[in-house]
Length: 386
Ligand code: LLP
Image (tube, rainbow, N blue to C red; front, side, top):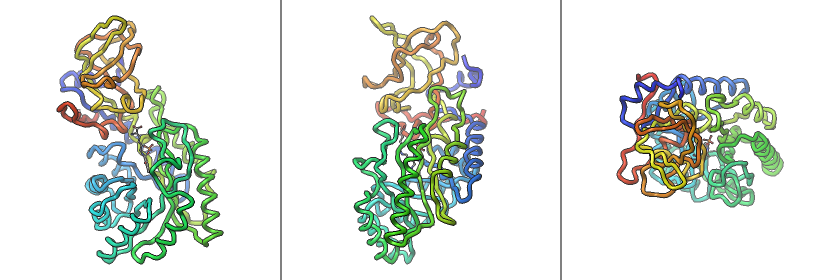
């Protein structure tokens, strides 16, 4: 049984819903800001894809962070939350003309571009408006991060970024386009990374590339964006509620060789918002099979897809029981065999109506929910609203 959750309030509410601990969210954002501020020229952008709940975005904005967006919808959400356009970066392999136009009209800080045709499209739309668009080239550094295969992005085989061999062509194109200004380099190697060596390897690549560009082309760019990726402890959310931002930023400060005045940008998603969120669900039935005991709950893979999609681990707590542990497969109501949150997990003896908290669900939880089986999207409750 956990005492940190307002269980009496939960009991009055329709489940499932996402619950956000506002105090922890604010503390996490403040810690990240504080640790980054120890180094001159470090800027943190929140990766909106992790969670675009409007109230959460408002709190992110109050903490003074910029935004990293990957669609026109995300750029729009960032601006609506009050995040200033000059702190918005826009990435993604498939930006449409409509999305580019929206970002140009808003006057965002930078487009992270990934191909020659994309930069040509941005140039044409910027020309129509009589403006110059600032861009950073997203580099594919060919580094394998120690994380799930579906969430590494920096390998040569991934669709993301510009490979080293194509870099000259992309820079030549940019230099020939009057409505594009090259201001930086962008990298991102993957997500849920807890091994600092991966970030050190990335710093090595950044340094190599900076030297090469300086020696070969006399090019020193003012902005280096190293992406996001810092992981969290899904196994122990109460012991590690706030990730080790001090170590993370110190790793970059120690390993990047920066030129005077160069600014470093980070795009953190999960590490800022995962631990403050839990998916709250009611137990619908306990079903005894021949060799298994199923806990059937009213949340499904449509509410939190990470276990089904990545085999991801989330702690599951029964807020209503402190009885002896039993073994359960916790499953949802969706008509798919993959609608499973965990198998053979020890959880206090549970009965119909008990309330569960599925922990560390603030990132890529609500944001990835969908409506399969005509299910309503999960609602949300913030701790300061009760
Ligand atoms: N920047 C870029 C270019 C990205 O692609 C991502 C995440 C981030 C920043 C933020 O990464 P973070 O700090 O959150 O690790 N749905 C998956 C994670 C997908 C991450 C996609 N890119 C999951 O639930 O684990």
